[in-house]
Image (cartoon, rainbow, N blue to C red):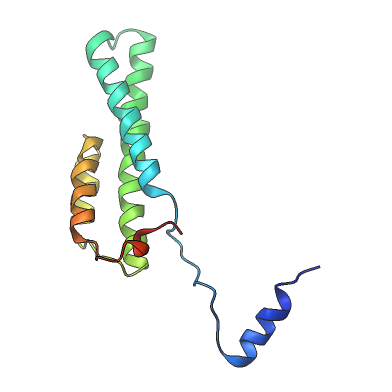
Amino acid sequence: MNTRAEPAAEDEESGDRSDPPDRRFDGPWLAALAATVGAWTLLYALDWAFLTPETPLGASIGFAHGYLLAPLATATILLDALSLAERRVVDLGVFKWVYALAALPAPPVAAVYYAHREWLKPDDAALLGGP
């Protein structure tokens, strides 16, 4: 039994819809970005300090941080920027692409992206809350 069907029908008749519009880019992007950058940094440091590329473990770690985590960090930066623009909080414009391209070889540039994002946000903290 769907109890939401009745209020939705009444809202359609009155023309007042309080449901938020569907957003394509909502998600926990900052948490995903922090986890990705943290994992990339750990694997990169491990690879740089202890492993050689000739070993299977060294090749696996190098593949993980170079070909899996770096593009994931890049995608997460773009999705977070698109989410902010879609919610009309802030539009980073061309900077989102600069940060994304810089994150491909070095995902810790996400810290600079985060600082820029926080600097541009409006005073209303509720706008940057979760979806």
